[in-house]
Length: 223
Image 1 (cartoon, rainbow, N blue to C red):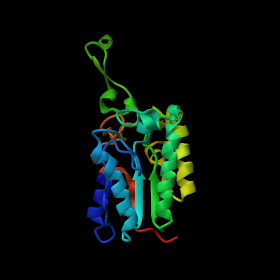
Image 2: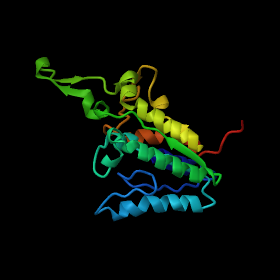
Image 3: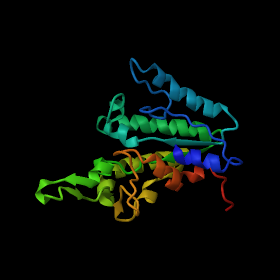
């Protein structure tokens, strides 16, 4: 993640980081992805086991596009769809993995979902409409209202937070940072896109602005 790497570069005395992840793989142990996915089947489990065994790994961050699994978008993830009862399986696995870390005295951060949807695409903000000829390209506001976002993600986020806290994790909710009380924008105040598509933040924006991740790396402040 660009923000984490930026913190490591600018705080070398306090940031010793190991990044482990693979696109499309839920960050949980014991998940099978079927034929043709041998790498995926082995990678995450080995990464989590390494984090458990290494005494010098004191903090573990678990993050994903949880909505991808909740809604079953894409290959190899339909088994976790909420409407099939599969998301409860994911929650059970998540609780199990977090507990195995916290029982070892490791600090676990569970990162909830960022706002997602087609209206976060940078291209969404430009609409082609011949009714306004000759100004056929019209700008529109991207993003989502908090109400619409809560309707889409609220139940899932609440379940993730509940399970994470029960297992002893610290919860990071990017929505509280990325949105205000009314709206979740797709661009910052200068007009710079915050997203690269509908469910990924812009890498350059993340590097400079995703401060909600800082506590996972930087030394804890005295209480």
